[in-house]
Length: 385
Image 1 (spheres, rainbow, N blue to C red):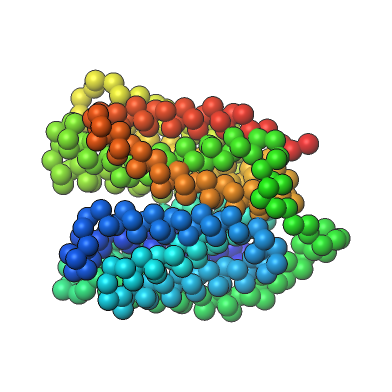
Image 2: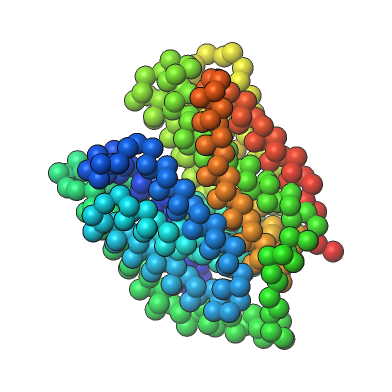
């Protein structure tokens, strides 16, 4: 099972690779394709739409085809979509290719999160999402290296597609490991696994609270990622270069925090880690709200990132305990769909409010999301009876 875990880690690096690719490459992609700045948001929403759909379909697909084959096809679909970006002649081709790109990502996320939640410890769940951060950090660096070396953004996309193609090959070679794991699970259960539909999973006590908690967390992550630099420049008067580097502290804190929280998860239960995460996030947001020196915002963003780190993996790892192993795949698909809706729509809502009023609303919006995380996660039953 250790070899399979290493392969899952590798696959999650691949899952993170496309997530930051568009933002890093759009300043050169957009002008070449005669697309305005806002067109990147449309591409992102199409991708997120595909991800939500595949997350909702994941329970039925995995029940029929099993985790290994679904993961292989999903990574291959993602690789082919990115390869299509390399040859896309216009922006509208990118919109078309964004659909399979999102569908592939959603299936991988729901399948592997549930597999690790069922078969591995909380340490490995935290590290799994740490490796996602490695992938999300690597792709902008790759694009930057290609462009600074005089290359073209299409070359960067081609390299990422090649990396995902190699991961697909590794997954294909590992298929016997997945099959042996499925066989052991069936023998331990003694009967075929029943399909729990999304509609049935929604009736489980606490499920609506879990979905809204995921929406709030990923809304927080997306809103900080999109608007932190703008807030620091327009409201706090920081220069653009420094603001960009300070904003990166949030995601750096998440990646480092998930590595460290893996060790903490050995000693502390997931429910306590979720509570600690919310309290640290609350402290970080309060530092942003109070009229304190500008340097405090530096510490606040780092604290907010480290505090955010254990929430998502801990919530995922608690899923089989809270909603039952039989329903965990359907619950996972619903949670992933809600998470992607949060990361898609919450930043847009803040952008609309900021346009109507002021970007000074940003920390107050974050406060509302963090309080939502805390209050909603506390309403979820700790264990299914």
